[in-house]
Length: 541
Image (tube, rainbow, N blue to C red; front, top):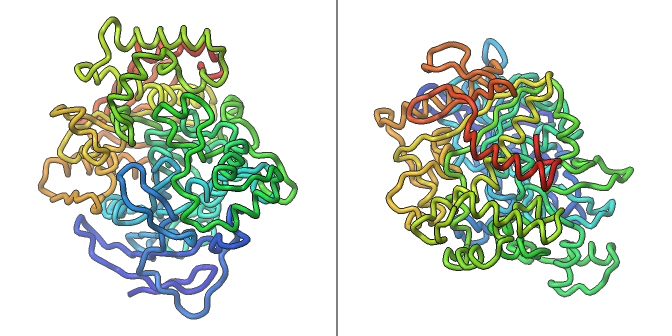
């Protein structure tokens, strides 16, 4: 056992031997804010209170109450969920250690910072501190009534509170508050990019890594969230149109009634894969008593620039769209919709801003590009998930990268994850292995088992396994970036990863080997850019 003091009191954690080298000083279930219960439900997190004596930090705090739509798990968790975990290789180092703060994915509706999934073993052996966090999800984290009581984005403000806690306390664990890297995947990656835009987050980190998610992804922001929230109240039995009445109604509901909620407002949301993310980040009205996390549309903020001087790594997997074949979708129904309606192929950003005549035209163009004259069927399902991946992840990643590269005060790196080994198991977790067949893919999420042990998914890794070499490469890239702002400070990994510029468009192909390349997915990206330049110019570089 080991004890340390933070601002709120004394924590007692444990010291264990890391089977992959070194030691791990673990402190779990640390409150970074007051429990968001009762009158604090839906509100911005309040600073944590001190505790008397010694607090047990050997057990995880509860996850946010949630229904896991990705893996079909039963509802679990608690509203009392604002906890983080700190894992350090040395609490008394000769020099303060770089800090990496992990923001989990899960579509803003599920997930947690649990070490069953996001354990520290692979990363901390590189002499960095890992912090993992929970934050409020779905309606609990993102209800919005455009009032001072419920302005929205509570879940993102939770993340900000966690980052502020790190600034105040991480030195007690041997960490350097001036060298913090935030990183996350999917909704966690999008969260990272929101922090690069939000005035609340400025100055809380030095570097940022976005994995398969940016603020420009069509699923990352919610459309007409106040109307959606009021519609949810009506569906639950509240007929009042007065925001204060609706607020009191939501406060009185049992937590079980506030998950697994769907209030689609458009055809696309009712029928396409992005419909799963309905309560997420929104533009906030400014109220004198509240800090605003997202004061303007993220696209407008991006055009003005991300936080000056922050170094950014951004990337995606080769077969992002495979995940979207699952998520509760009946693939037969997907094909029926795609065959019957040209609008099926219309990107959400265009669907929300263009007349139906333009949508039909765009849908036909995109369908021809991905399927040519081929019939939509299981025989060419790879064309379907290529389209879905490009719309939801790949084009938004490249667009974000080009915008960031246009700002001279930010150094950026881009990667494409193409690795395929026995640790690429997410197609099985998403329940789409039978659709993809025997083909090995680099699915959405498949880079995670190379950064974390992911023991909850039965993914043990022997140091002698071939995949361990890939784990070593991946964790070296990520931790080098956290340490130096450069993922390949020398040639020890066999490749030099050059920063991305608009002129060269360098990126790193992360496969079984590391290969420096340029201009990823050139033809496909140029096609999408042509579409956006004509039909939605603000989403074109």
